[in-house]
Length: 408
Picture 1: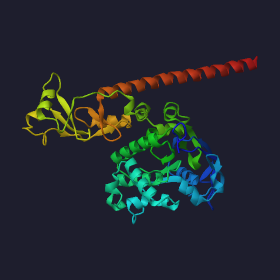
Picture 2: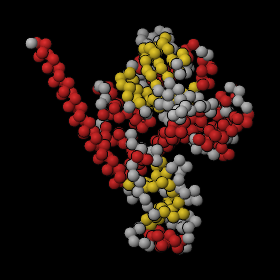
Picture 3: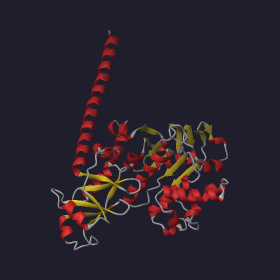
Picture 4: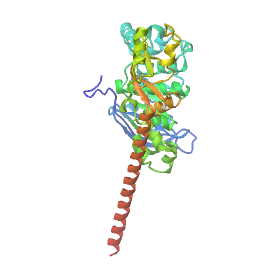
């Protein structure tokens, strides 16, 4: 159950966590300590083989630690039944990990049934979880994994991980096997879910852009999961701890910071709209007024459907069925400005429709809005750099002063 602040997650503390495999000269994970707050989304990012997945799997003891402690809500889980622990910790992996011989409903209901939920409660939870991840229960609950797209399988995998309402969700590169467009949508979906559920999520990726987009804090890991830097995305982008972290940040830090700003944080542009069931004459009246050259046609659920221009109406001949251009791209208000920029750049008119949780139309983001945001980020970077140099200069001056006093 959520606490008074709406947080339903648990705090996690790793103390001197180590994993050494027999016959290995060096440990795979070496003496890792970390505090994770309840309700945080923490991302482990680092090069292949650095031990990030091993560290993740030790939290639910899929891999047993050689030494150290794992505390969840101050309970040392290294001393309890590992099977019971895994039923209390959600786990989602790459390629979903669904059981192919089970239906979607059977996959999602697996853990609730194991822990003794009644049939009525299980059935209601399956429907709730499918609705939560944006899949119609009546359409999907009886399907098998092979009948789903990659993105749909990943959504079901997340639904299964959350089915028993665990306070902790572990995600091991869950979106790594899908195409870039689906991956962006799944990332947006996870952000939306976290706003609603406030779980404690530990997420593993090798993609730094994904880490910036998702993480409340990011742990940049070296070999053996040594922590190079554990901080907010903003802090890592503006003040990387060393050259190793700078290598992950790479060039174009200001553009990467577009992943930190959501569409909901910038003003949207209002454009004329009409519904598919509106009389054709009323649409002509809107388009014939003043400077209106374009109109967004919404479907019966208030979702973006078509862009209509004056010339399209002239060719409509009493019907909008073949008039206009279908909306091929849209972003949600949880999407990042980087997502919006990519969509705008692929649009001939330089704009993209913004939608809410249920796909409903909220407004439009255009190139001017995005360019202004980029300029603001660049200016903020310049000010941060000036401030950082001033701090370094003050520190160096203080050191010289102390050395002079010592010499005298």
